[in-house]
Amino acid sequence: MRIAFRLLTILVPLGAYLALGWVAGLVIFAVWFLLHLRDYLRLKRALAPTLPCPRGHAVAQFGTHRCSVCGAVSEGWLWQCACGAFAAHTRCGECGLTVWNPLVR
Ligand SMILES: [Zn+2]
Ligand SMILES: [Zn+2]
Image 1 (tube, helix red, strand yellow):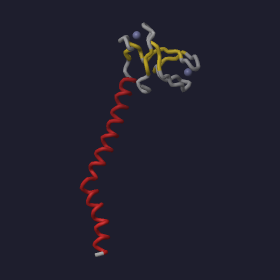
Image 2 (cartoon, helix red, strand yellow):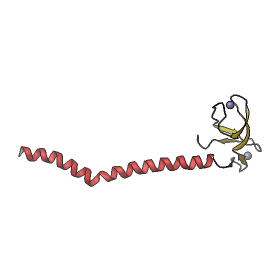
Image 3 (cartoon, protein in one colour):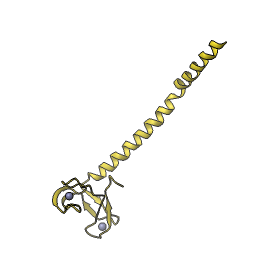
Image 4 (cartoon, rainbow, N blue to C red):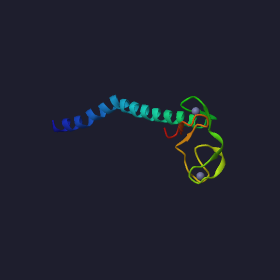
């Protein structure tokens, strides 16, 4: 009787894991997949040639930009300077509204 009880304490959790373990795996995979899909979509927007401001004007993400931290004027990606500074936002050249870095927001 005592050995049968010990076997049950091992076999029941093992059976439950084998029968329902895929549910936890599916949830973990779904969370992983959605987080990576979000990162992919943010990166896709951040690497596009232009980004729309709230009024729809096209803000160039590549070209000549002035760094607000070191003041250097350099050519390249809008969001990162050669000094290492990472910009969270910029302003639209036409209407002046803030355009957020897609990797931040
Ligand atoms: Zn800089
Ligand atoms: Zn604008």
